[in-house]
Length: 384
Ligand SMILES: Cc1cc2nc3c(=O)[nH]c(=O)nc-3n(C[C@H](O)[C@H](O)[C@H](O)COP(=O)(O)OP(=O)(O)OC[C@H]3O[C@@H](n4cnc5c(N)ncnc54)[C@H](O)[C@@H]3O)c2cc1C
Image 1 (spheres, rainbow, N blue to C red):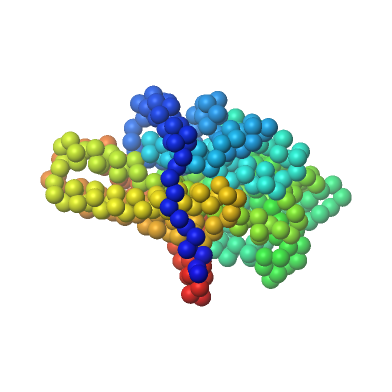
Image 2 (cartoon, protein in one colour):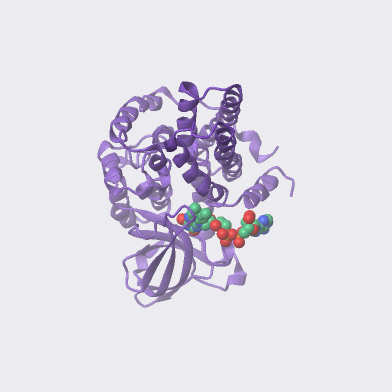
């Protein structure tokens, strides 16, 4: 039996589906004046005021315990919220990582003091976290991280560098995977996770501009940064296991299927109204037929997460297939639009296509590259 035999189809329970109506009403009003090419940024879009509004609605930290400001609901409730945020192209980038994985990680591995300090502001949409895994020379090969935290009399002394850190320039904290003992050759052994206050002396954050012109990720340098003893989250030397548990949350959600959905929606609306052709109808069918089973798989992984499991291989499968569809959408829509008479396509649709086309190559890099995921899937199937 392979690891994938355990992915069974699941329906979202009605009490969680019931969240859709109020969320849709809220988003329809909040986003009514935002053009599609801006909404297309969605979980890359930084808007702290919007995050705070979601926090006030009780829509952040919805799976987290009420004792820490959360909603005490299931992962399905979060699935519905996230699906709606992405479908509407809500600017959810500020709180995205904190809500998806930092707060659950702190709840699972953190001390009581860490939970009380960090989780309530995340649920209010006031505190943003970033993921400090990748380094120059340690991206796919994460076990070779060189950033080091050395215990000293007053806590940990941190030195090294992270790269590609999404939103580091906007975040208050990073959860960093660092070496706390041994040498880089020791690989997974001796790695730990530390909560780094990005305002601490010795931290320097330098944004990197991508080809779309946005600077959403950064280099982060640590030069003798003094961290308190309680910066360590979880057990020393257990960073590798903790990071892997986090990755199932990172790779299985609707954001790995819907990065091009605002473009698809805008194109499909225009096709329906003014641009109907047999070829466009076939393309719409092809995209929907690709998305529907993947969404069912993503929901099925969520069901495993609700049972407290860590379905890493299944999450890798959803992400690999999902990002393939996310990249197909702009390429196929470009083929359709550029086969039409000049001047017949609305400018707004071309603007959205332009943005999504420029960011689409990153879909199969961020969160683990296609080749790495396929290696994991092959191992899960017993093929390597
Ligand atoms: C938009 C975006 C946001 C990101 N945000 C974050 C973030 O917030 N935090 C963070 O820590 N990182 C982040 N990353 C970094 C991302 O996780 C890494 O880019 C990714 O893991 C690949 O690492 P790398 O860039 O070092 O490439 P490399 O590891 O150097 O890989 C280069 C190429 O070689 C292939 N390759 C590497 N090893 C193998 C192998 N063993 N077998 C087959 N092929 C292989 C890869 O698939 C890839 O095609 C982000 C990246 C992007 C694009």
